[in-house]
Image 1: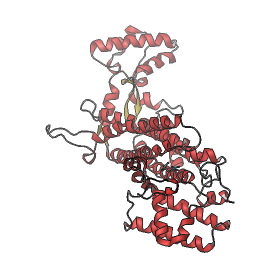
Image 2: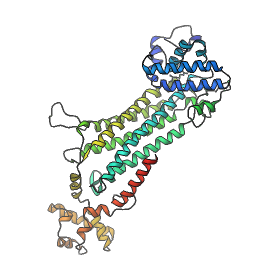
Image 3: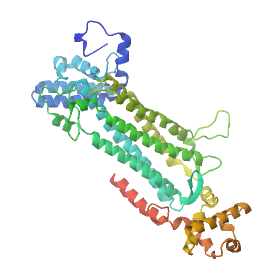
Image 4: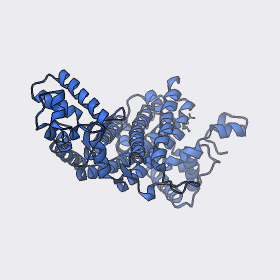
Length: 459
Ligand code: ARG
């Protein structure tokens, strides 16, 4: 057991207590951030005359050596250390002796861990953002290729009005674009450096907190040392943004699972992204989509867990906060894995355009347009709605669609109908005439695609 704080104790820590308390098994994940933070701290200490330049150089060289050796696998991070901070400090002292004992001057593990976690989250936000962007690039491509691919739009999972595949994909484009916006907001809000806050009340050393903040790429130092060591808002915000990403992926997965059924056959998932059954030879299951949908639960759980952990803890640092790590790491890894796999599945999926278009032709998706046709001829909308309702009933009874009805049959229900009704309710017109901003018509869609392309270039 290698601890940093044995001085005031007369007994060894109980083995179970040691294990219960230790965090090395998981906080080793941010060894890089821990070392980077220490380097900035040491540079600042030397600049302020708290360490000599020689001490600084020895420590920096030692830290660089540790980083390189951990990275090459020469130095193993083992459980004999309580946490990653103890591991780095003990190794530094082993390597360079007395100068290493000065590393922790003017610092507490409380501001150190707050810094490490921020640096880690910040790096991960950048990586997650890049993965979300890849999904957007895939969506944009599908949209461009399917401006005229007609399919039914649903409400209540009942056919509603015809749309296009480009329009449907465009809905997800909006969701994932907002997700990137959320990540950017979090990054901006959290980007203040807690280092130099000490245990909770700052330090008496003349630290230059603005300098360390700058060295580490922060927008400035945090402004209250108590808040600095006990703020995990940014973790909660990240978990909330990750939950929303998972919610979007899960909804999309659910649709793909439905579209992939034998009943729908709107899509064909590539063999590389499907699995089989051990007993039923014919099966090809959408396991990736199901797993993405399933894993949403554990990301939500991380958010709930973190909110609950934080709700009752008084200022400032409390050990409860060590619980932030495992669940945040798990949520981040889960989301990254899901985004990468989902994108692979989406970009290799085949869309069965004929099936989609045929499906849009059934189920009276043009009923609203028939009503709008009557409105165009001066019938008040509520009356038109009633007339078309009767048409639908008539068709259901005869097992035909609105397009199959003869003009006499139309006229028998309302004399207002003329020969131009067929044109008004054709699939093409139903879609292409919907050209208000955000609608599925090709002109409206093209305008959105141009904006999306510009966004992808600029962001
Ligand atoms: N492992 C601890 C954590 O993750 C580091 C901070 C420890 N500070 C302390 N006062 N015991 O929160």
